[in-house]
Image 1 (cartoon, helix red, strand yellow):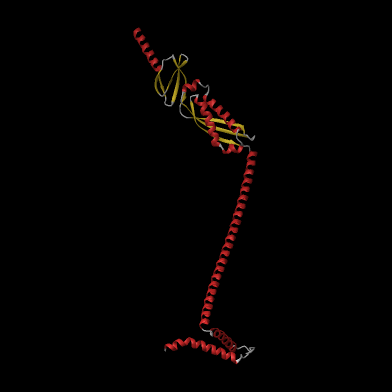
Image 2 (cartoon, rainbow, N blue to C red):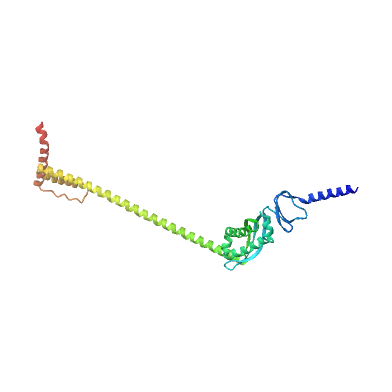
Length: 307
């Protein structure tokens, strides 16, 4: 009976030893194990074995991405405006050993570093820049936190400024400034429109004047051409008359007599009661008729000779 009791005790101790030596670590967790007070190893997801009572678990960390809420704080901008600001940090622990031995409280340290970085960055920006440069502010926070957290076994993947609270009086002043700016832009736009309209009207008037001048120039050119053609016709007619006069001395007298008879016929045919017909000398009339007959005879003589 004593042997059985001793054997049972041994088996029980073995079972207890085995149960204490086997450690099942969940996925996405890391356990830091110390042996006799010093770092021994890091247990990762799955079945792991340790020596009971010699190896002790110092800490455990979740390697999933975590959210650290940065509490709201009052900061002063470059133009001396006090605003409230808070942020959110996304962080993942990848080295449990560094997170255990390099920093006392990892999350609190990241939160404090984010707050000091926010105060430093916003202190270099004016209020308008702070409100319009969230992307730049997020990038500056990410760079500062990532450099520091790297030595702590963590990786900051993203930083977002959640909210920026501006005092009500400052908001009212900004709204008045925006309204004034909108009115100024409206006036400038209207003035620019009037300027463009004036320019277009002036351009239209200039184009109209140019077209009118061009039309006058073309009209003058047409009249000049017409006069040139008439002068050319008159010149040809004079040349023909000169040629006829050279051939027949009575040609000039014929033309003058023709004009006298035409004028006299026009006066005689007029119905006006106020006309006065002055008879010409019979000799001149007979001379004119003789000149006409002479010219006609000279014109028809070649035909008579041919007959």
